[in-house]
Length: 155
Ligand SMILES: [Zn+2]
Image (cartoon, rainbow, N blue to C red; front, side):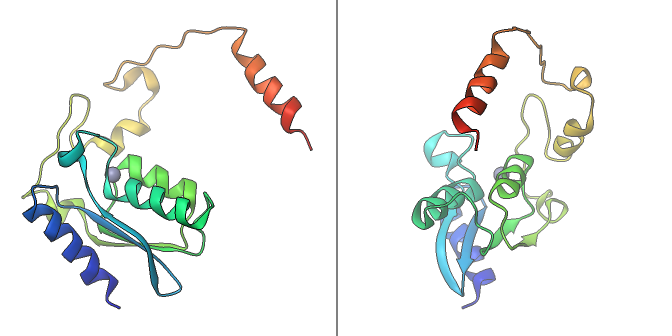
């Protein structure tokens, strides 16, 4: 099966239905395990990116958080959120079809604290130089949660 074409078709169908131009197909042993288009427009859920939705479905179906024997087909090189999600589930490989540079003339998704072309650079900045304010409030109690976790999970 042509998984590149399937990914493009899934994204095109989504666009025709009012959705955003992204899709993900997750494949294992030549079979589709899970697939999803981006559903942010349909759900108002800003985390409903194609990769995230497909990862959730695949992990549920396979009963694991590790997708190490799966290949991911994604329409566009991933945003930082989806890149992080893919690192967590560790696919065998990720096949991306377009780059941000390819689609930048046709698609924008700028937010208060980033534009698509500055998003990755934000992560490289020291926390106090990032556009999104982040303030640490220390508490001596917090570490007890981790100490308790280790007590309950020590092997
Ligand atoms: Zn994403």
